[in-house]
Each structure stands twice: as C-alpha cells, then as structure tokens.
Length: 520
Image (cartoon, rainbow, N blue to C red):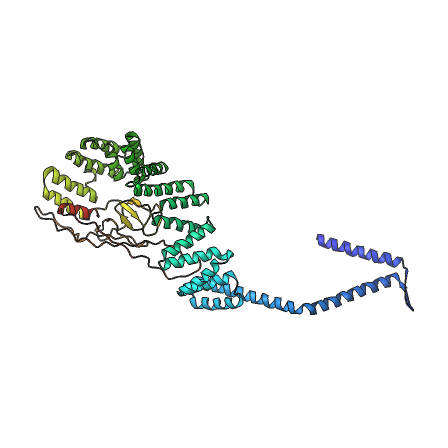
C-alpha cells in the first residue's frame, strides 16, 4: 500500500512539473555555423531526452557485442557447475544407498566437470573405498589431506584405511596429526588416547587426557575418573621399579576416584607399608560401601602384615558388617574363617547363600568339608555342584573376561571399560565360566567353557580327573574399532582373531579342579 501511495505521489509530481513547464512556454535558439534552430523549451527538452535514450540503447547494444565472449564463457561455466553439483549429489546419494556402479559413474562425471572441487575428491575417495580399491582411496584421501580446507577429512580417511589394513603405526601418525591440527576433534583425540594406552605410554595418555579436558571434550567427573584409571595403571606398572612414584600415583588415583577398586587396593597397601593403617582402613571402608570387592577385603585383612589369622578374621568381619546383605562380605568372612580354622563361623557366613550357591560358595563349602571333617565325599559333591552353579562376577569388558583388572578393553580400546559383573557367557545350562585372558569379538558375548565339564553324581574315594593339558598361549594386538567416513559403505572388517589362553594346571588334582572351576 505504501508503495502505491509513493508511486501516485511521484506521478502527480511529474504531471505538475510538465503542466508548469507547459504554462510557461519559452524559446530556445541554437546557432551552429550557418544553421539556426529555434523551438520552444518543451520541444527542446523532449528532443534532449530522446537523444539520451537513443545513446543509451546504442551503448548497451555495443557493450553486449563486446562482452559476448566473456558472457558465453560464464554461461558454460555455470552450466558445468550445475551439472557437476548434480553429479556430486547423486554420487553421494548412491554411496549412501550402497550402489557402487552408480557412484562410480557419477564420480567420473564429477571429475570431468568439477575436477578441483573438494567434494569431487571426497566422492572419488569414498567410491574407491566402497569398491575396495585401497590404492585409489588412499590417493584421494592424501590429496584431500594436502589441502587446508579438506585436511581433516583426508586424515580421517587415511586413518580408517590404515586401521582396516592393520597398519597401527600409520593410523597413530594420522590421528596424532589430526589432533595437532584440531585439538577438539573427538575421533582424533580418542584415537590418540587409546593408542598411547595400548603402547603403555601412561604419561603420554595423561597428557592426551588433559588436552581433551582443555578442549572441553570431557566434563570434570569423567575426566577425574579416567585420570584415576590411567594413574592406577601407571602405579601398577611402577610398583616393582619405582615404588615412591607408584605410591604417589596410587594415592592421587584413589583421591580422584574413591570407588575405583584397584586404585584403593594398591593405595591402601602402600599406606599400610608406611604405617598409616587407619588412613588405609578408612579408604577401603569408603570404597567397600560403594563397591564390595574381594580385592578390597583382602587388602583390608592384610593391612597389618604381622597380624594372626584370628586378627585378620576380626577385621574382615567388621568390614563385612558394613554391607550385611552383600555376598562379597559373606565370602570374605568365610575365607578368613577358613584361614583361622573357625569352620563353624565359615559355615554360618555361607549359610544364607547355600540355596542357590555360586561357584565360589560351592568351592568354599568343598574346602570346609575337606578341612573341617575330612569328608572327601561331601567335598566332591560340592565340587560337582560347582560345575553347574551360577557364575560369579569377574572383570569383564566387551565380552572379554580377565582374571585381573585392566585399564582398557583389549577388544575395543575403550578406557575404563572393565566392570565387576557376571559375564554374558551363560549357555547350555550354565556350563560357561569366566576365565582369564579369553577374548571374544566385541559384537558377541564371550563363551568360555570348562573343558570336559559334565555334571556327575558324587562318588566317595574316587580319584579326581587328571589335569587338563595346557593350551598354547597366543597374543594379538587389539585394534581400535572406528566407524567409516560418513556416507561410505565399506565391507565390515572382521578384526583381530580372539585370543584364548589358559593358566597352567598345577600338579595337585584338587587344586587343578578348583582353578579350572574358577576360570584360571
């Protein structure tokens, strides 16, 4: 509406101006050499306006003729650009749909129409990646890594290619370079941290973790927990070579994560060695309330190395009373009572758990029957029940079951992955038991079975079966599992073969049964 009003005002003003000039006619005379032109002012004004319009039209026509080559060139460039953009878009869509043939066709069109575009390089590299052409894929990603605007995606592509083909050194170099270029890049920061952990470079891992915190990739709680895990791992690695530094690291780790069992256990042992018994006891008691664990009970029992078995039993009973309903307290009291030869107390401690005993409960009952009454028949009956009893918790991460705590998962490389829980390995009537150093792929639960374990009726005075032969030990270096560059459809990498290793079976047949039932 406002525009209409303005237009009407402008037209009215022009009309008034024309009328004003029409009411005041004047004469204009132009003399040039022998020519004299006389006319009215209005006619002269109209003539001048006509000449200006004609000159403008003529100049526009001449200018269009002069600039026609450049205009035609711009037209064809824009046309090629539109076609190249369409080829790139359709190629990326084909990659997302898993159509390698269409993706290859559109990639060739994009290279012909837009050879220098970053998306053209990405389309070509991902097409080669999806087709399994490693050389062409690396060439494309390397070309992107040499350009500032596509450096990070090129490094990521090279990192993934190196991992897919098991080149851990190259993968680490690419991740380190990406982390230096962009400290807040999540995949690069995680990969650097995992590689340093796998190499046992705990100082470097702590430095990488601090860099992640400075880049605001971790909140304070997660940072302190992971820092405690790394310091605990370093303390464990230094406890035989540099005990002073190991002590400092363990105490700092226990301070950052008071419920981290291995950190508290090793820190309490160091405090006990220096005579700080009460401080170590308070530390264990706090961790026990949050996470009852046999390692904590063992560390609490042995705070004073010169104590008798009865003294250790009294200390363990006081610890177990803090979590009266938890089975770990009952098991800890039973073990201490057996060591002190207080067998009635051991039976009383295990009594609430005999209706559906776990393997550790059954084995402790077998030990009680054998040591207290010398009843080998009852002891073998409890050993037989242990074969099919419900499993006990173990240190588990990504289907990998370990006999001791580890700072990271050997399967996925995830930091602080191990949890004290029952492994997901129960098949065929609870025949699977946790075992040490047995790895399984991360996408399937670990299945760890007792060799030759079959339920059997108790037989008195029968000899136990001979020890199982020791399985050959094998080791493999786990790889970090990384997703593929977005939109690229790549065949799944089977990853490293799972390791399987069993502890040597001792000469004693009874001890051999117990070790195999406990999984090593």
